[in-house]
Image 1: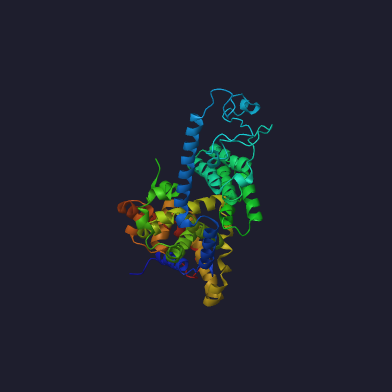
Image 2: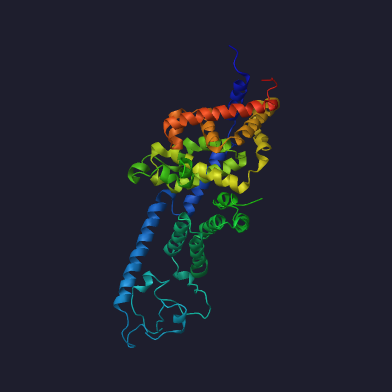
Length: 221
Length: 199
């Protein structure tokens, strides 16, 4: 019986697809990029565990600091932490001003960014931290919040967390990852043009970054 | 209701749940993951409509993601995992690129293949791949995927079912329908047959 010509044609098309060769050196380039990425970040295999430890550690530090803050909550003006409502207390009620000459507790360094604020600034936005006070775990925690919000589909919360990363932490160590998260959050929030513009800037300014390919996928042409 | 594909695209880890990390990390390295699955993922991404260059970028992205989850991947499910990631990456890439149609023009960019086959044979192959891409483009996504897996990757139905996270019976019936649709489309486009004979 003569084989069906359409089936024959189909078979030849699939054969043509199977015969296609991968671009020369593509696998090697991928491996090199993966290794570079592994050197720049907490390594792939250890990244999750590393992050869990950091997040856990930060959580414990928060708990300890919050507990100490409650125990040492002032009952009169003689205590180290002033009960006088500061000027900043109107806009940031959770923050208490600390007299410069006294240091209330030693738990503060574990959570420098929130429990003991630097000198309040008159501006409405949250003050930036001294860059030396910001640790990798601070930055990772902020990005973890953004990433979790994004996974949950809450793009507003993700963008807020990224704003905090930019304005308060002035993050540097995870800058590329933060930018990628922002691009993705903008894209998911329906701001495709903004995402594309940011992705284009990222690609232009970071040509050697392993995340460039991912950013490029958000660029509209 | 979310389809199995949505589950895969939305969250590969959900469709292919992680296992005990101690077991998962045994024997699975970046090198082995890339070495064993790079070609498969690249061809799947090509079959899903990405150009050669985009397929390379997307494949790298797939392994970038997989590498970060290396400790969660059981070695015997690595292919399923990277396949799930590849579907999501392809989905995003095609959306972002708005189906750039440079697919057809960059086929001949692999000079090594061109040299090995000769210009006439290469031109024929390029046209064949173009025609195949056009037919696949007209298939529903779920049918396109099983056709790619069955006819290009030449996987068994059981393997397709495992990759797609669907029952074997569903995979078999989906493949049957996909082949029928593919045949109908190809019949309509047979005038573009690059091999010179008239089917």
